Length: 437
Picture 1: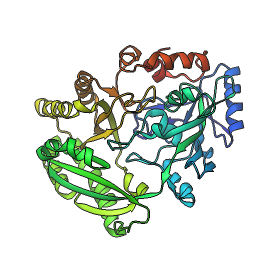
Picture 2: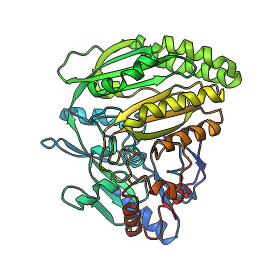
Picture 3: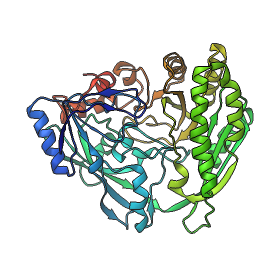
Picture 4: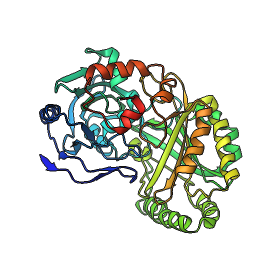
């Protein structure tokens, strides 16, 4: 289906575009036809998922392919625990697709609204010292190249290029299928609580190593951190999910409604931010439950925000955090959103923020009606001093020259792009900036 181009906006309202045309392909063949047509017209073409990237990575000024209808399960290899999904499948749809086969994704981030293709292409990750990001779970993929042909990477075809295609920024072609290495279904025992920040920092390394999944949120202008510790259990383990009313109070009433009011109030009257944060640090957290893994990993994020996240070598995580905390105090800013700190295992994806090194992640946020520029740029300067790499889907200012030195396989990726898309059919302004024209 093809429609005249309506204005497209991402979730964070940081990017918008009116494409020349918008198409809604339902099949792989339809994607191929769209690419061939765009190439004949010398019109750039991009695929979009759920629009949860804060950067312009999905901006499509020419032809926009909305992949929401290219969704669902293609095949399952139960013996190998591998599943192939169409690229537009949303992460929150995956658990019900896998449940009949007793499978689950090994790790997920804390938002599940993204498409599978968008999540892997931007380097979406969760937390856990022994677990990689979602792209690290990819064992195969199919994409439509600039010629309109299907290009396959798998254990049997072009296996050496799986690490490139699995996290391709949308620069190599249009992903149409993704094959994920799954694990037997499991449940998570979650403990969330408010703790003293200094104690959390002092024991962070030990807790991250001991727990399957550990992270914390720091409320600026307070001495409190909300910790989240998730322990993996067999699917047969007893479940004690959050009561429906309690979950609604925590996630909808407090996590969304109260937080929305607090952000709006803090934006209007910055002096209110410190007391609001102190109150938030007291009322958020302090709950314990056990449920299916996907229900625990993901949380509802309805309050609109902008975000920047940097990955640093895990040994640099605490000093980078301390420098950032000192910066907030020195500048006298009033920061209403908590700062998120996570960890992830090293992987071999060429453009992964965790390529070749165990990594710590620091994510900063700003309410969408507040200008994040000064805050984000100052934090970015600190992260770069600790050998940081920016998340591809979150706001940053780096270009190709700065990024090349941070990724050992950067030039190999550009060479593959030259091979698969020599005329830059899949380009946009963001890719020109981060990869070069």
